[in-house]
Length: 85
Image (cartoon, rainbow, N blue to C red):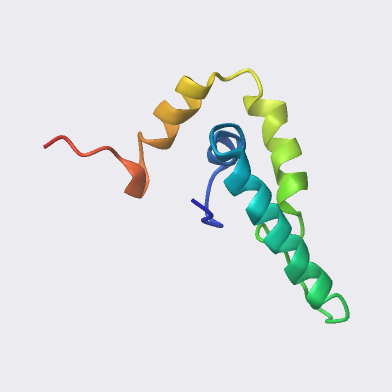
């Protein structure tokens, strides 16, 4: 659930569908950024953008999508494709 390779739509889905997991991930990222604040390179999960900043950008595109639309997208590609057994 906390994969750094998630797309913007998947980040919005996580934020809406699993708010406690989202909050935990944001807290862990901030703890890492704080711990290594004196290092020359100290990137967040999404590189130079924090998760919160990445989410804000993602919401500009996916804010109007319903949870069902986000879920459908999430399970329509890659390793998240629903199996048909």
